[in-house]
Image 1: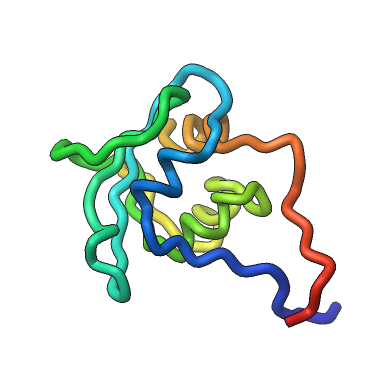
Image 2 (image 1 turned 30 degrees about the vertical axis):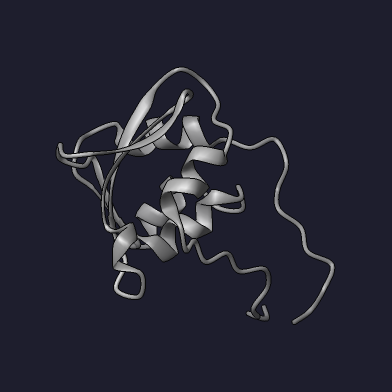
Length: 114
């Protein structure tokens, strides 16, 4: 097996990225994001089929914005990130709800090699 780089997604503006993305289902999940490079992204974000908004409540999933970039385009799931130790489920069932919301019928694809 060969491991190599492929398409990367680095979210710089979480508010616009989460607000501009479509979501499946009618549930919601609250993400507690860390971002050492772009501190304006840090905080707690409530995501639902209606969009996303910053909230002062506690998060149900704790993750770095780089992990969010992995699931944003639909190439990976929150469950895969949890198994890899890339996020922490703070409330039971949050991973499953996040996967349902971020579900994508199409996997990302990039024909270019950078």
